Length: 68
Length: 372
Image (cartoon, rainbow over all chains, first blue to last red; front, side):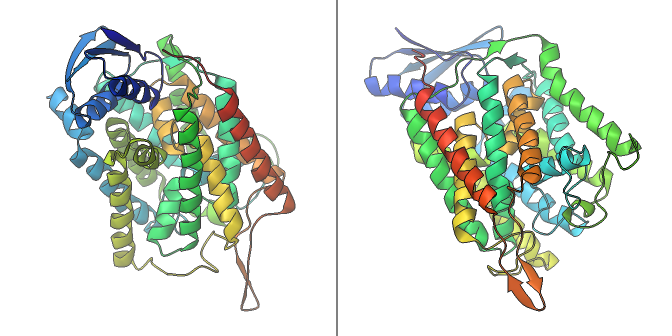
């Protein structure tokens, strides 16, 4: 699984990194973020791009799995 | 319940609600006493705070603006209520300070931040079109840097107390406003006796409006820079729906309140020096894009624990001191013996905008870090 570690990055960087991974086309993609804003923004972008998004929370951090 | 609310605020209707409420409140604040086309202006209000503290001595623009205090504290309340308060810091703070400084110098060249640019347009000030165009160009340049890998590095989780510093500074400012102590003869706290700084809505109303906007903006991530950036970067129209709602609602409110006057020359607290309206906001837009948020958003972030956004805010306040002490800020158009005299920038102001653009371009070009 391809992992995008966007923890500690402020928007829009998590979204840019996740989008690059989507464009590369190797699914599923794991995106790690540590802010609700980043989680919502990555989710919105991924859904617009036609991905399904599963979210898990671990403490303060979130793991999103994008699949197509 | 909390989850459902979070989802509503993140939805299109959430951002429309935030834009609509700001669009109602800003013209009302003007009606209740705030300066013309300045119901809310984050840059101007931070500049007024800098003046009240004596960081600059422009006598017409000195007041501790409760709206700014409310923005930070409202965002903090929202962040705690929804368990989103996260203290973090350490993503190139000195760069953020410099970006804040130049963002303010650019905003004061135009005489307004993106919030006021929108409100000026909603009041019929067509100079705002030049400002907003400049803002979009600055953001578009920033987007190119973002695409090329620009970033300021990762922030680290830190002690909750770090995230409390900006809210506590705001509480301190509120106390200074309430008690208005005099620290020395002819010394601060300064309150303008005339000019825009002397015009303000009643304290509690301003504070309440600020708290409400801070709360809503923290929930919805309302951001005037992000609105334009997301359209350019990824054709995402979510945030700009909120900004356009603000513009339309504020325009309708201004019509109802009789606050619309179309024109270019002689608009209130504005100048019609087109090139510098454009370039000033280009500088601001670029600095906001590189820092990841408009001046309002930086206040909201600093309320939810972001120490780097707090440094950006301090940079803006320092920038206001610099702008007025060194005669960099734009002068409004004035009417002398019935003739409109076009205001604008001093040669120093023009130089500062150019230096700011060069500095921001250098930041965008040199600060790339591998993040994958």
